[in-house]
Amino acid sequence: MKVSTEGVLAPRQGADGIFPAGCPSRTVLDHVSSKWGVLILVALWNGPQRWSELRRRAEGISEKMLAQTLRTLEGDGFLHREAQPVIPPRVEYRLSDRGRELAAVLLPLVTWIAEHADEIVRSSGAAGSGEAVDAADGSAAP
Image 1 (cartoon, rainbow, N blue to C red):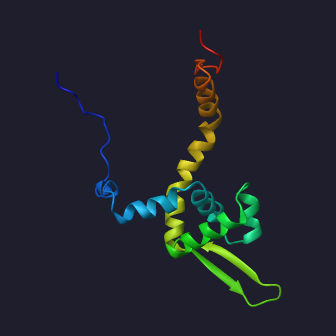
Image 2 (image 1 turned 90 degrees about the vertical axis):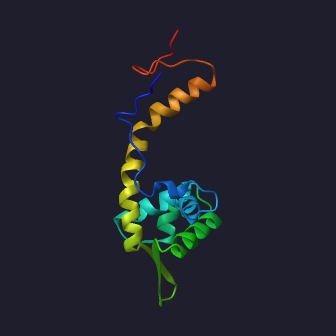
Image 3 (image 1 turned 135 degrees about the vertical axis):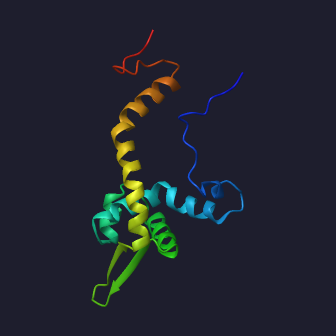
């Protein structure tokens, strides 16, 4: 039997580079696609923010995790940290050009997730309980 691949999207040129275990793209993918990495990058889309603003936006992030995520994203060149010489110290974070380019790619993904999250969680929650869900109206299927 012949299988048709018509209409199937192929990975973009160069995307095969993410599959080898030792590839540097795996490290970057890990940094960018972590739960907190995505949230921080998207939070900075609208402009510079201070530590406390980022902590409020990314509800549930610990101080340790926020510090680690900011250091990692800064080290990767996705954001800039600017410490202003005032008392008390004022530090702002903003996306670099590379970070803005990346956030522009992440925003459609985050928007899609926000639009579909309730339905996905509702259906996966019911599936986890052994109950099927009718996708049309979210009710339990017979």
